[in-house]
Image (cartoon, rainbow, N blue to C red):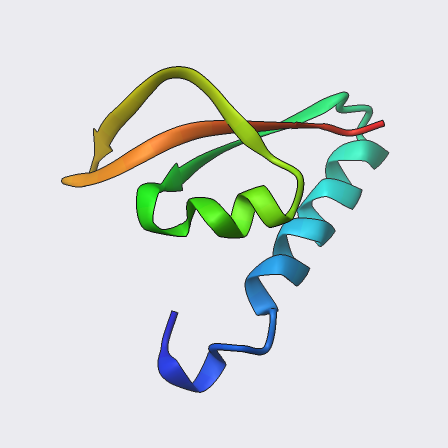
Length: 70
């Protein structure tokens, strides 16, 4: 994210809105392929690591994360 947007919790707001939309469509859980350096952002939003560790996506290390939508 660009410096001008940092600290405004835009990413957290986007994640929350996506979760609301997923719930409205009947989803029971939400998955995210998260870049390793932003793992903490997803953890603060209630996600935890699932799967078999890191993988590369577009040359960047990622991890699969999941959150229950109850």
